[in-house]
Amino acid sequence: MAREYLKKATLTSQSNASDVTATVQNILNDIEAGGDAKAMEYAAKFDQYDGSVLLSDEEIKAAIALVPAKLKADIDFAHDNVKRFAQAQKATLKDIDVEIVPGLVAGQRSIPVNAAGCYIPGGRYSHIASAIMTVTTAQVAGCKNIVACSPPRPGVGVAPAIVYAAHICGATKIMAMGGVQGVAAMTFGLFGLPKANILVGPGNQFVAEAKRILFGRVGIDMIAGPTDSLILADKHADAEIVAVDLVGQAEHGYNSPVWLVTDDRALAEKVMNRVPELIEELPDVNRDNARAAWRDYAEVILCADREEMAATSDDYAPEHLTVQAEDLDWWLNRLSCYGSLFLGEETTVAFGDKASGTNHVLPTSGAASYTGGLSVHKYMKIVTWQRSTREGAKPIAEATARISRLEGMEGHARTADIRLHKYFPDEVFDLSANG
Image: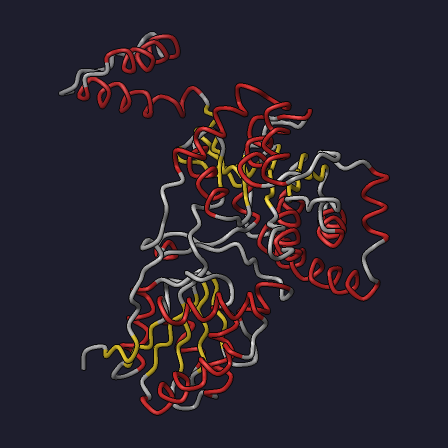
């Protein structure tokens, strides 16, 4: 049967997208022209903060002293898990060399970028986990300069738990500056910082737009939209757990889509009845976000069988994908488009968001159809090299000369010609395009 929408979204992630491009571009232009002073002006305007921009060792120690021991232990635990997984990922990158033809060797090297700028949201929520995810992976990759940038709160500064997380995870500088001005400071190398080679981490629509505009001048992890999550559930799933998991992700924001894809109508109806009740039990701000997300963006899709469920999921290419169904190995082997996959009810998106080890900076808005999330690999440049003997260069030069002339690129051809004539002066070569 065709997919049946038991609940259909009335809006998409683009429905209420305001045009922030001009605003962000103007701020970036102002700060690039005005430097540190202009960045401070915007910090005073948007952050209501006039304290230290770069935290001193004493300020870091003072902030760390405010973090409860139990919270430190939890952050340490999460950091250790993320670090261990990142180290395993890095181990998959190997420097290689191979003899292409006798005498010509080509190779690959993995080189970390010099400077990483890690943006850590600190507005409505203190994103402690984002500090762990971004800074740890940069440190494991081998970046020499890692700036952790987070919005300060008036009269407080950067949240102490964020300071602690950034510090233990390997940040070389911690910057108290938020929004576009923070992104600009890292990109342009303000306040004595090295210019960032890559910007990573989640942020609001202004931060996301700043990263999009600056992409090319610097690398970025991805162009992010509202977070999204999809659950695949069959008749064996626990409807209460499915409902709680959907609500847990809907609280991210008013425009954060959550989707349930199932082949069991009874399960779908139980979940649809339960979700609104669970939403009403949330605290005020979380409730407002989840209520709007469920009302306007959520979908419940009934499919004929698990193959149609999997195909539907791949079409959506969700940021977070949970499977609560039998035969988890089948799903692992069948599914191909997702940011991060959570197999079985014993794991959940929040585990990956906070502490289990995989990264929570993931592709949104269908981008999982062509890219994965943040990892050690994002900070690494995969570069190539080659070296040749004169004999090894001979067949390469002959082919290069003829191909270049066929393309009309005579200058290229002559760089091959000169080597052949120098290395093999007694030989005659047919290097014409039709040779």
